Image (tube, rainbow, N blue to C red; front, side):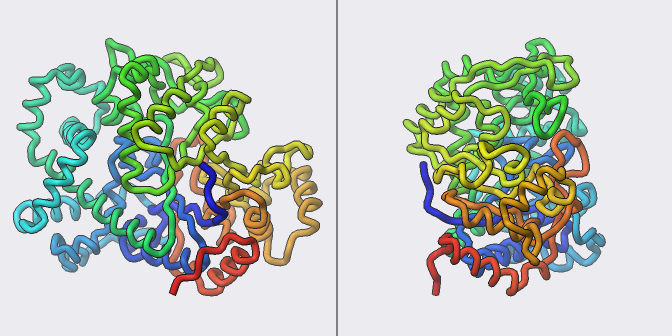
Length: 502
């Protein structure tokens, strides 16, 4: 559906300042929303919020529906009486501008376990709320909590390496495991209860102040996830080993000469369709519980997806297979209503993909960093935009705008400079921000790194690079009144300002 003209910021919560080494849902999150309000912004886009595994990628979570425990604010647990300030006396010294995930895990997980024990033994007034949460979320929470408890017991091994009877979910093995791991299952349910409590409080604060939250739903889920373990029939797996039979990815593109081999299992769409897409409907329902708009990552995979046979080491030798995207979105609309969706339609986009996107009126994406490498027909040039789209200077997969410009080809630089007329004294990042905000695109989203004018060292992700991503953080002192005033002035000039709030 088309959305009103607006603008906002792209920032993942892990990038917030925090004395616990990673951004969380505490004071800095509320300060960031205040900054958005003061800057006349209306949108805040986050990356997927799920519990991350190896590599710390939000796009490879242990669950498509659970929340990341590392985002829970320990300070807000103090306010609930589940921790005390004394629990923070011997905190580690964390890096200020990046996340050391291993160090964070060693610090925060013991705090969460202590809070859980206090909750179980003392917080009787909250038990009813917890019970209601567990009942409402049981369709995914029961499997997830048991999956994580089993994963801990199996020292982090992937589910398809567990004992066969539990890997294959034999009913008697599941009953036995739930009984033996009752305390561990309770802990993982408690953590989800606290995550969603804190997130919903933050979302309520954002919405109250006119900020709409855009969530991100990856098309694929991790092979080693509760979703695949609990629903193996809807994924393309080797029936004997549980390994991935058909792997997801994309062919060679802008980001990689050998393509991107993600390793996720592709869907058994025939089985999904037989089930009236029940799992997908539940997935959309789950994310709509805690965001206002959904950005669907890799939207083109709903029309046709790149499938690579087991054993390949790159994504070069794959094939396109058609997917029943139209039937899926009809089923979701029938059961949940018209979807508030943005479509990530980058990469190899065909007329069939565009037709699917346009049939449901999903806005597509335009990236200004892609606009100057070819001629006037380039669809990322602002004069070629439709109104029903969202424009970015860059995304989490791109270099920062300053980093991109510094490494751009002379051809791109020359075309950009001719397009702009000149580079302003304020720097190339402000030029592209102005270009985005002044375009006809209904929505404009700016990564915070670009607003701050940071170079490549602030990049969030390098596609196909397995480690060292998702680590960037800003400092509280970066969000100055001067920066807010400047963004507000430009936003008002370009007709994207939020309604004044008293």
